[in-house]
Length: 627
Image (tube, rainbow, N blue to C red; front, side, top):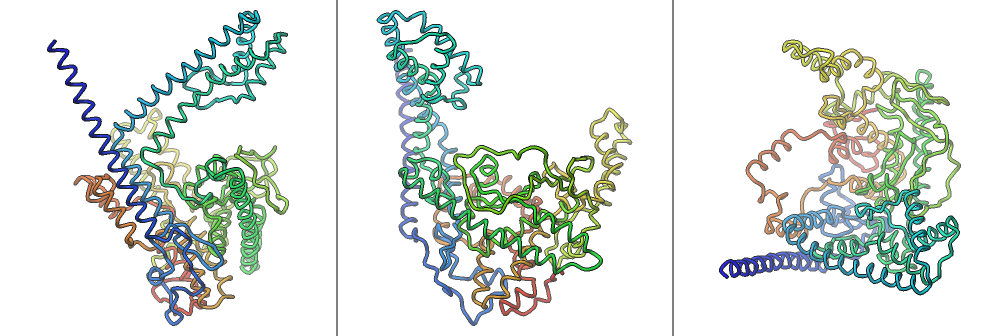
């Protein structure tokens, strides 16, 4: 009796504690939602009205990042960071990131309670699902007896299983999320099974058999559980379909079929606009390259011109690659298929910002690293990734299915351009200049330093008797020691920091692409008034992100809430050890192939004499412009 009472008491206490935990979770979520509602009501959720000239003092000169960060046009507290009079805008991505950081913190903090609720709901819905399968099987047995088709049902069921295995649909519960045949698929399987076995089932039996197969392969309650779990701490979503892609792919999320089509139509229109800007940017780059020709470098410049002409524009088709590369506003050049892709999040950006980004990415086809690589046509058709829907726009004919390869020993057929030495780059003086501290101070690979460090490690391995053919580390170091000159003669400007902890780190690729982009911006700004030029520089600066660090009221309130909730990523909640580690990262930051945004603006874009002239700014003697 005593044991029984203890058991009852322990159950009561556990339920009481769980109830208290649930109240804590509920209270935290409620407080977070109240805060967000308050912020959304006080901040301008509608697009800010940024008329031409708003926030600009026509007398004052805007000649540095610091000057631009004082502009009234930057709406740090708004979901829309900036919008010009043309409707082109930059979404305040950091605003949503801060909210999502808090959501992640709450999910981690209350993980036990969330798991408990999930398990409870899974069990409940799983039981109901099983009851549906049992009821359907009971109905099938009754129909089998009624129409005397029991043996035929067994043969058909066995054949459907064979067909499922043939096309790779597993019967394992763990694979349900991957393979969920639709009712149409199952009807097709059943028809094929009837054809193979030469059996015709009663229509009622066929309908019930399909229902059973569908229930087995489609545990809908799993999706329902996910939905309920997500609503425990509601996700903070942008209402912009270029940021929340479910508004482009899911009819219900979009608000109906008409709304879904409107979102897709807008995506296609903006993609067409982006392509037109891409073509205009390409022509500007070709014009700039032609202007740099002389009798000494004509062949080298022609090598670059051919690369620029053959880059393919990839519409943002929401493929797996786009999903992976477009976690935030981004655009990228891919050497593997010599193509440019713009992420959906950037499609609403101002034209001058898009031109700067596009010029930057196009320049990667001939930057300090890829200039040396081979260009060749791939054999066979291009690989086309699956996408939820196609984006059809009017484009000039694609010039070819090219690839830009950095592999020395690759000997492809249909080669267009062979490898070239790093020293042969016609912009070698520019690359050297970009390393100057008065310019962007780009970090570059130092082959002699790599050689010295390699030999030091080999000497240490020799001292302890481990520089042997069987030692893996020694094999790699010896190979590097023997072949580094051959490699760095070609690819000295490459960033290899992603391949592990290596001293072969370079910012030359990104610094050079920024430099080329500044030349195209300069060509455009020459035609604008001072105020228009200032607005253009602001739009470019905001597109790079993180140029102005000061938080406004909304961000401060969100941060205060996170601190109160003991979210571990905020200074006040860090352990002493974590504070020390964070401080060490600030003192000696991890390598980034991009110079920081402020340097990219102040010491590259605003270093260009023509841009400073357009802004009516005096030349800055402390900053060096690289020809």
